[in-house]
Length: 219
Image (cartoon, rainbow, N blue to C red; front, side):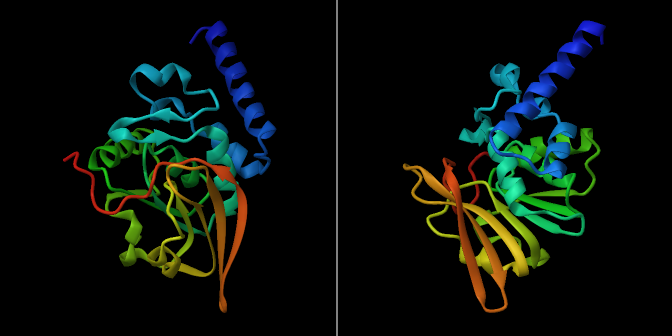
């Protein structure tokens, strides 16, 4: 890498982090994780050159990679500690799971599209992210074999927080999930489980692809 390329890369990273802070991502651990995990490898083809812009981008199987500020805000809301076992529903590009891998003890990520899981797993191996397990599964049912989880993050919108996922959350655990109809602006909700039930905090408006039951037809 030449000095000019090195300078350009450093400047791009500074702008990227500044954009995150300006949108409300202020948690130091989250910012460090997002500095360490380059978004570039998670976006292929025509849109690769736009990897460092704060915008959602299309990926395979008709899905999207969320804009970095939303990834940061959802991660921040999850309040992950280095002792936590985290379930992500909706692997997509793998970018969110990679960020979580820097913060959590263990990350399980599931997606209904086998192709997305395969491609994300390749990136995890290339980046030596050994604490992520990626599986093809119907995420609306969670991952009962590995439950309970300290944290659950859902990167697709459900009409209500899915019951199976609520059941797989530990007492004291936190789930972050977009809730609402897929053709309207949804609300990002943080659910905290207590001995006596669940608390719900509305965080911000968002827009996500819908959470769909069943496996994708992509082989």
